[in-house]
Length: 171
Image (cartoon, rainbow, N blue to C red; front, side, top):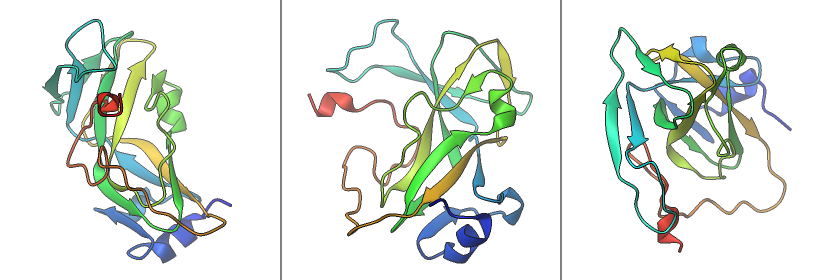
């Protein structure tokens, strides 16, 4: 089952933490999250799963920043979230998708107990100008069945910003 907007509001500050929370971003069955003003890009054309890959940071000015097709940009949400006793999921907003932007390639599924900022895997089909603090994606929540076991990863839990891949820690 997916929580309604009313249920999200009722569970706010209990099983759902969203900071900052703005009621105008609440939808009938989701909550809109905003794009922070920073991105990172990988600086090498060939990436290696077994090592940390170098990155550069990009600041998105208020005048916007032009994204290029065929390039991965990692961003993050403005909002810090915590989810307890529910499974959070992230999807791009339909208005964003209709412009040819994807906000996650594969990582839209959150873990029970995740605490932190969501790293966005941004990819565009056409050159696109983006702006900081735009409502770019939406978080929604599934109920669970069975005993809850909270997310324990040391890789991404309690992150403080954009997280490049840390897969090398597993290999």
